[in-house]
Amino acid sequence: MRSMKEKMHTGELYLPNDSEIAAEQEQCLDRLYDFNMTRPTEGEKREAMLKEMFAEIGENCYIEPPFHANFGGKHIHFGNNVYANFNLTMVDDTHIYVGDYTMIGPNVTVATAGHPILPELRKKAYQYNAPVHIGRNCWIGAGTIILPGVSIGDNTVIGAGSVVTKDIPQNVVAVGNPCRVKREINERDKEYYFRDRKI
Image 1: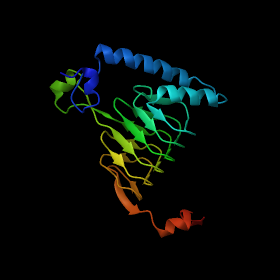
Image 2: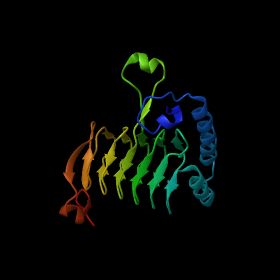
Image 3: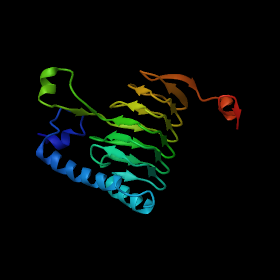
Image 4: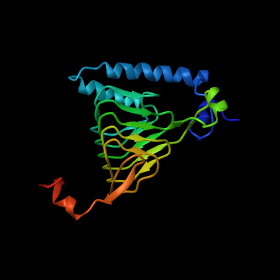
């Protein structure tokens, strides 16, 4: 029989207030607190801390504090050259994967945790988790919310304020609540970088 801690990563219902889980989480959150208290001039210290805190983190990654994560990054996997602006919230109760060169705007939430619809189960504090995958060279616009189990393809742009409830393919611009594909990235994008402004 699987432990509550093992069930965190299988998609099964489990109790997050389990003593083994809570003890580990508290240690992670202490380290996250220390990261958020670093000064802007302490870039090297921040980089070293993230390498300790994250499951994996590549070279030249930058996260602008404050950063919020349920397990302080323990289940987060960043490629190289990932940038995240202020107030990134990652509900990393299970694994979150972010590819190389992806940019994340301010006030973005990436959630892996969900709760049953059935009130009786919620009353007992049951939870389930589903991993999130964000591809290479994506741009996740400000205020986006990405829900459990979602995958976003390489090179895709998610417009500001979107709520991503389902998978989004690669090489598209998608926006809205719920987030939907608006168009493919195309030849015009090779000429114009913003509205009618030429590159």
